[in-house]
Image (tube, rainbow, N blue to C red):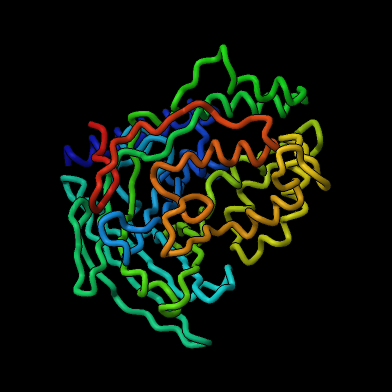
Length: 374
């Protein structure tokens, strides 16, 4: 009973903290919309953070998939365990159509024990034509590695959050944008003499790490190009959050009150990538209004204009050639500075960096993520 009372008090404290800082911590897909910042909803447990996909550095024939979740600071601002009964999914397309999901890896977690350990079940769902086959892929306990006979490895649990970003500067950028200030004043928080701040420094995340022989996720041996997105579903089966590429929702779909444009972030999180083509016009408009990138025509740095860029990032899935180590936009390695790349694209070269560098010391072997910060 005492453990239950302490856990209840701890969750209440986390809920209060989430409310107090809801306007401060917004990064990548962390806390990307009103629903994910509502402390009463899930305490961050269903708030997806990031998706990573890269070639295994130890076994080049394997692909590594990492889903992180839990919001801004797991263990401090949200519980250090997966929401029991919720569903977390990798959804993979391997036939050249980015939105039809021939392969799904689905994870469900139990209630935590007194040591906050959980059991989990991983299910593989495969679609061939109109037929669907579902089978239990693995069972395990958080914090422990599971290795299967086909070489697949799985580990779920608490890790150091690999993301790095100055979300405080982005918060100021967003506020300046909503106030109608010119672009030079919007980007100023990212520039000297302001001091860069890694808002995810020494923060933890929950992660589902998989290393899979690439032939297990490809259509066939000669088809290395796949795409992936991730989503979380509440215990009643309702989609709560989703993401593919980093920061698409966070960076473009926040409200612009002076222009009469509402937040589309919750609506976006309820959609599937197959719905995203219909959002390209809206996304292009907002990229133009927020970052100054022209809707059409030539961009000074040779990059895509707002309309072309919206066509690149929507549907919101992460493309990945399982034989290539190139990194973002080919999958995403843990060390890839995706924010710098996206700021450069969104602003047409006017802003090329948030001046924040990776702070984690990653492992060279599975599960690759750094141990959680005490």
